[in-house]
Amino acid sequence: MENKERFITLLKKVKRDGINKLIEWLERGTFFVDPASAKFHGAYQGGLCDHSLAVLEEYIKLVDSDYEDEKAIITCLLHDVCKIGRYKLGYRNVKNEQGQWEQIPQYENVESGFPFGHGEKSVIMISQFIKLTKEEMLMIRWHMGAYESKECWRELGEAQEMYPSVLYIHFADLLATKVRGV
Image (cartoon, rainbow, N blue to C red; front, side):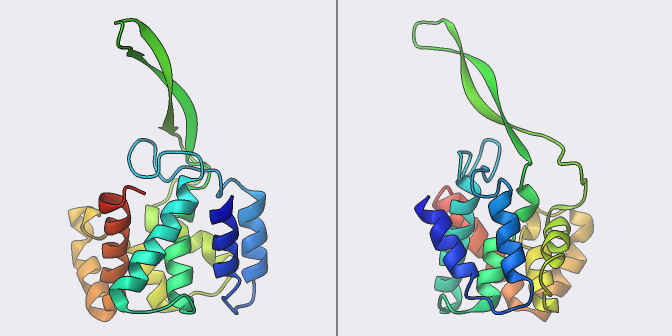
């Protein structure tokens, strides 16, 4: 749980009302044991925390920032809180090398009880604890970049023009998932 401690230490650098309640909520829940996805990046216990830290590391490199940057800490570490409780460990059948069927563990995507858009849901969840700036809301909302539906691309482009950081968090997310595999 070394990454959990690092994550919490970084989040404690944020000096906003409600940050301690947000940290308590994350610790009481499943954030630190949840995977980042069902079968792609970070599809293992604790993958969500690892992924969030990797996004922060990549963002800091991209924008030549540091680990004191509240905007980077908040947006990168919390951009995927919507995934809390989203994946359940199940099993699937596969043939082993001997040609016999065996069950292997695999995460399944389950409805979380709050069906809302990916980025919007994270913004809503975070906002229950701390006040986000307009830029932070847009960064979290649009961190999926062009993976969003084509119907949203106009708004995505507007957000990226308003704040280049919207594009940078998307790049950081891509580097963490596609290059680092976390």
